[in-house]
Length: 276
Image (spheres, rainbow, N blue to C red):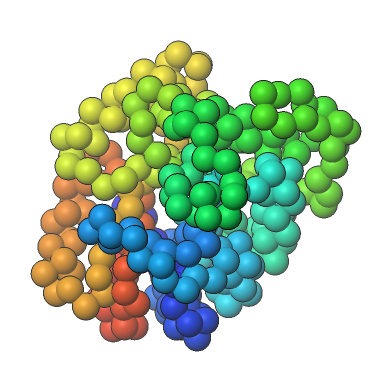
């Protein structure tokens, strides 16, 4: 199983840079941040934490790391026009010499939308936006000029140049809604990142995902399966349980686990959990 490390940009920059360097040097498959403008939800309570912007810090991560894949888990589709996202992603892919993983999802943090005056449509509408955005972004990465007349966006001879360093930037879609979200995953994703669940529940979701793949004519083996595991870097009980937890998830079909830290772990903790 692949192991990656993630920390939210809710800490001072020096702390983030240390985490990125340590994870890269210790051999983690990937290093991730997240896309929020303020706050986390912890035990159901909003925490309005000072937060550095996700894609700006991702560009910094691109230069701090040398080997690991990098990405934002996951970008909210409601926050930026997909053509802007496509160009941002290409820029970061060039900065990191082709190590970008493009994470995207339907967005969920309603307070950010309300306080910034952004529309927060229904879940179904946001998932439809995700579907359309993925199509636009992939086309901008691969076609010379793009014309698009859609439900949410219109493009006329749109250009995204230069093209990515990678022949194909992987699109990582986060979400687990069985009907609409997993259909978008089946259509567009190179990797599906689901919230952590019990192995039995994960197998049930996987079956629904594979049914959607059959409906859209996609081989489900083309899509890597991943989950996030949320940890406190100082919680010894969580850390000790991680080995058996990973083994159960791997047996259920998970191929990639992202260790997402609520609090910055020491280098010693990262080294202890690092892939062997």
